[in-house]
Length: 62
Image (cartoon, rainbow, N blue to C red; front, side, top):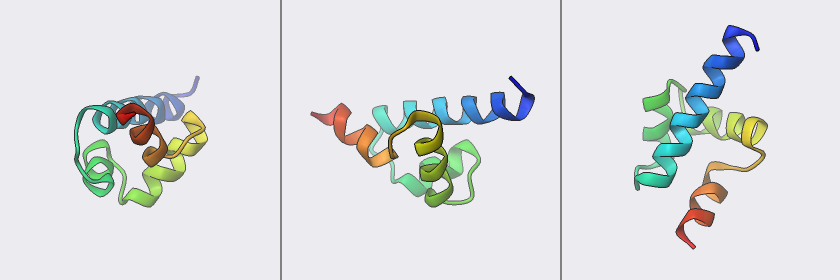
């Protein structure tokens, strides 16, 4: 795994934790983990986890 891939993995894991354990808006979480906006975070979540941040949060709330 390259350093860039490891950094992305760590960012997404942190974002996943925040999505599941806070009610912060996506834009705030994106900023906290180093993405410019919610769109960038959403795109990367779909690539890495296979689901959107919204889907991840909705499944956890059920």
